[in-house]
Length: 65
Image (spheres, helix red, strand yellow):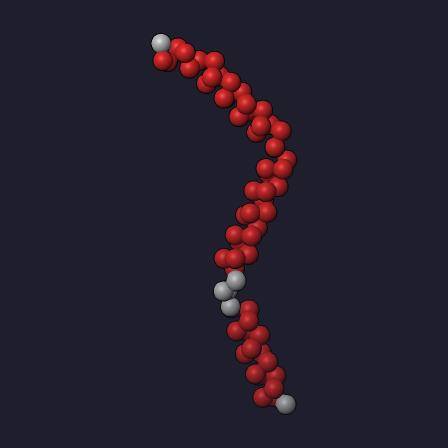
């Protein structure tokens, strides 16, 4: 019976120290956060891009002469 508990404890230690999937979980969490930020700030980002493009378009004549 002691041997079973010893083997179980060793296996649990192996599982606890195994970090092979940590990188995948980190990447997934980063993607989730980025997607959430895009959804939250979508309107502001579109407005900013439109303003930048209109400024470039309006001032293009100054650069080209």
